[in-house]
Length: 475
Image (cartoon, rainbow, N blue to C red; front, side, top):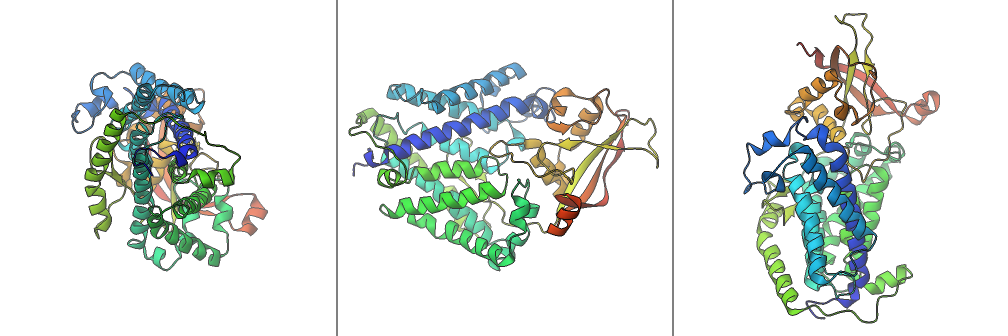
């Protein structure tokens, strides 16, 4: 097979590009709709303040050249528009150079956002999207043979995503080794979805089978990606099925969907045509010489930059979700090396009383995704990413994880800040802001089937204590 052309992966190339365009669209929409409250000029951790502390070299971004909320909105909405056009197939007929420019534009725009996003963009799927987006620049338009070297680079990325996650688990929490982690995980994961309650109540032997299957998927199947077809494609299909189970049982932003998109690139046209009613073109355009040279250079860059991730994977002190270069070209991944056994939630409350006392009535703020009202069924959010909800989960694990953003959040509620309130599902003070806000820590658990039938509640909660005492703007 030609190392620069892979005619037998035409369907994979089209499916991959459509899927990636969809994820880019979701990511840019999320940035456009949430940035003002989180990182805007008047946000919880403003970009201008961040840019004063970091250099372009350490955090490359267009916003080093200029920042305003209007300019950020232009960047985010431009990315969303270009992503939508590619999702509709409007880029298929572009010449090779123009096709590369369009995908490079998406990569540069999103990298610029991630590199100023601070703690709100510190998730593994953000870096993963940047790395996948960079490789997509060199895959070529629909009517050209996809370069096999880029497809192999995508398999290498899928290997690191799965194998890195498998290693961090098997080295980490003992419950991964005794197969009991899923006794807890469905209940304590950052943001349960509508099926998480049911997943939690599956029989414990089935939970043990889930964990064992996860180890096989993450520690054995990734090696098969580099074997000839159909073995590589079958391994990728099994990974896709596993990721679909994760999609069905939890809200992990676009991590699982993006992993599925990457895995689709390893499925040959022979397998695709056996699964779907598709017919690859009889003949595809050959890549020009200059493009072949570019692909070789990209492959060389991936090999050289893989030193850091490989060293990290073989290290006993393996870390997860880390970038080794400021452009986030080749990274290391992993998740849930440790599993929490209990679920604590921060509940924010406000009151209009001038001087809160024992008889004061407090009203709860409700978030869009994270648990609050015990009678509310956990919603389906993914692949959309509710950044504030996720950070609230981390803050409940430890007050140190509330970092620089929690008290500004409380101040915004006291001010009745419109942009901040848009991030919430329910504002109990629609007419005027509260005089005081407090935060309380509750222990949450899923109700049992009997409790569910009796009360209709999905959660049971008990007060642990105060997370933040009542505060006012004057205080």
